[in-house]
Length: 314
Image 1: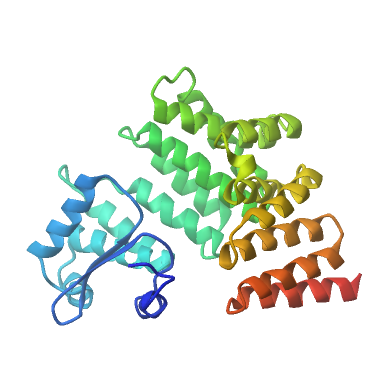
Image 2 (image 1 turned 30 degrees about the vertical axis):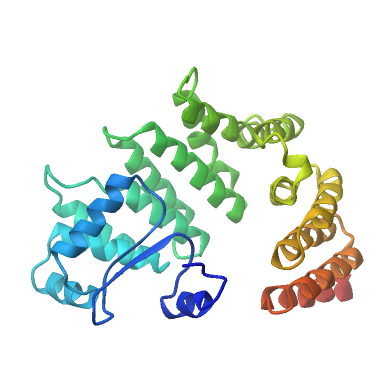
């Protein structure tokens, strides 16, 4: 189902879908059996679907059953359900309870706990210290994978960027660069290439090199398509580097973008960059164009009011 077309928006609201992909397994009576979010390997998808079919109890029924007789399976499924609803505190509680009940045949959930704590921290549901503790616990697990080390580096960097706390990023970025040093696997080589910009920016503190690394990590045609230009410009904005070039590239991206929401998104990036450069008047002009491109998006109206307030107070 496309969440932006047809009856998609109504279904997104009905099922409270926070992001894509979100998978919901429904019973014939409409009750939710299981729910989870995110891409994964095919075998994991099949296992979740098979588990839902073998135990066709609803989430509400599982919750009642768990209260009476707690099991690892119910705790894990309830954790996944609440994670997919962005209810990270509840999800972490269930995952931790499941981890405490784990036996040799159960999946270790320390990385899952880290994911919900880091995601919850971005939404002010957890503190930075909670993220560090969860990350260190996941890394202490002997069965950790290189992919998990890379994901921890990415997510702690995202948290640190959002909370303006560089200290949380450094040890995990360094570890990710260490475990991918000399990698020949194409997937790991690509992951390392994508991490180099943040490592240069936050660990070695070389902004010029970071920008160069970021450009190297982009697709070959990124300078000629709106998505690539918007992605690079937004990275510059988030990190407050290379803003002059980012300004020009975002405006170029807006001219290349197709009319509608795609153009509005790039115009919003350009507006944010203008505001960050102290040019709030241009930011207002750009966000007004975004509203014209996507008039039903209330976010851009909020942006316009925000920029107007900034200009009035300057």
